[in-house]
Length: 112
Length: 120
Image 1 (cartoon, chains in turn purple, blue):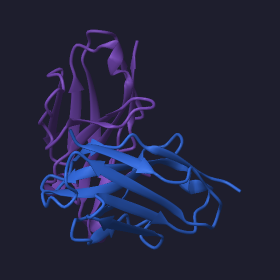
Image 2 (cartoon, chains in turn yellow, purple; image 1 turned 90 degrees about the vertical axis):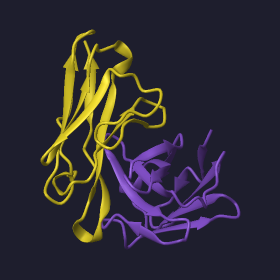
Image 3 (cartoon, chains in turn green, red; image 1 turned 180 degrees about the horizontal axis):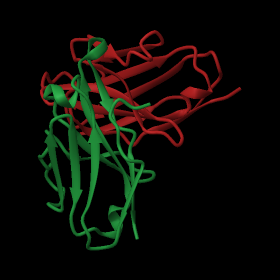
C-alpha cells in the first residue's frame, strides 16, 4: 500500500494527451512538499521527468508537464509517442513517522 | 557527467545480510548540496525508498525497514553502502542507488540498478 495513490494504468493513442494523477494527504503533498515524477523503462535506470512539481530537467521534452494542487499532483503528456510507453511514478516527502521519502504505486502508460 | 554504479552479490540466502555498494564517479560524494539514497523495486511492485545518507554520515530510513537497515558512507572512496539483515524472499528486488537533492528532495541521478535474489 503506497502512501501516494496513482491509477494502475492509463492509455492513449499517438498524438493524444494523457494525464496521470498522484493523490496524497495533508502530511505530504498537502503539507506543501514538492512532487517529482519519474519514467521507468524496462532494463533502464529511472529517469527524472519533473521536479519541484512543475520543472523539467534539461533534455526532457516540453511535451511533459507537471502541476500540483492541494493534496494532489498531475503529470501530463502531450503529443503521445510510442516511446512514452513506460511506468511513471510520483514521489514526495512525508512528515509522519519522523519524515521519509514516499512514492506512488506507479502508473503503466500504454500507447495504443 | 555524474555516474552511479551498484555492486554486490546477486544472490543472498534467507536470514543472511544483503550488502551493496554504490560507487560514484564524475563528482564528489562529499558535496554538501546532495544526499545519497537507496531505493528498490520488487517484482511487479512499485518503487520503495529504503533510506538516505548525508555526507556527514547521518542517515534516515524507511520506517518499515528501519530495524534491519544500515546505510554508511565512505567519502575517501566516493562510495556509500547498504546493509539489509535478516532477509527473506520479500527482499528480492532491483536495488538502485541515487543522488537526492537536499532542498527539494528529488532523485536526479540514478544507477542502473542491480537485481538481488533472496533464495536458498
